Image (tube, rainbow, N blue to C red; front, side):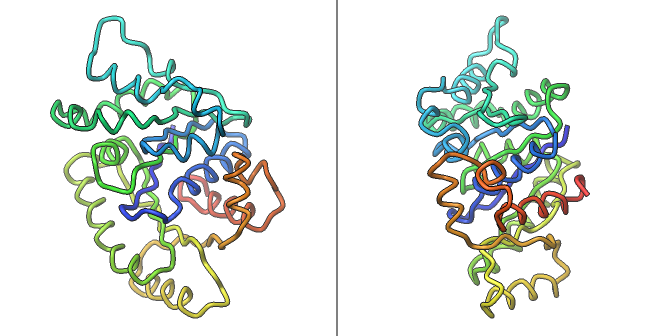
Length: 258
């Protein structure tokens, strides 16, 4: 079971969109895929379940509550997994209440618990995709410790370029201290506009530094907004759309998927 996290401390770089649509590309290829939404905002949960996400039992909140109040009758991790309307794609949804548990989880040093719990699902899924908050907090650190691979979104912005090396350094630090198996699988170029000179220049600069820029870029498209509003990943919304094909190409370019 391959576990991947999409990590960036900057908000608005498309983490949830990338997680959901790469997970959808994996499911469309026949894989059994789980998305774990660790962001209290729950964007990935809403993306996959729509308004039904509000009615779903707060699985992640219940999971972390169980971690804090462990008993001999604790539920298996499978109990917190929910089906989605999309074949091969399951979800452990988020809930705003998990933000309130962060301090207690940190105090009890529970950063390895997610990794241990996901190991229970090794026979149930081929891939796990972890969505994280835009901060290096308990939930993001837990995801980086649990993951095998890390993808870093880059939205073709000069400020993102300056922060990128710092992000990669943090991943290296977490690898050294907590998770020797963690690898940076690549930088995801997002919101790419091929006719604009600045995005091309910024990407060329990353390549010149020998950074692991993945070869398939994601375009800017209003189709993403429609996909969000209809709570339908692009693979099911419009399989022939250019951006859908770009996500499929990006998934195929990942080291463990090639």
